[in-house]
Image (cartoon, rainbow, N blue to C red; front, side):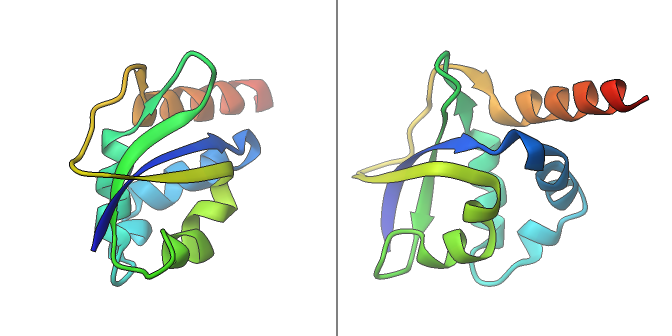
Length: 111
């Protein structure tokens, strides 16, 4: 088991699908790492530069290999990982709030 600081850039055109998968529980239900990903998104923050930062536990020999293959690479670009000793809080806007606002703005533009 290892703990990582993750930094990535949200693919804005995929925001609505990510929000839907978080809301309907399909990410949290994914075994073995779904609940940790859902929890990690709850801890995530969006920095002033627009990067999303979060802490996540991983059991893969390659950092976040399964998470990237099943979820992260679908919704994020420029993903980097850095080993850390403990969960961290990051300065910035809460990611789930940011994600909700993005989806709302997108749906407003479509109406």
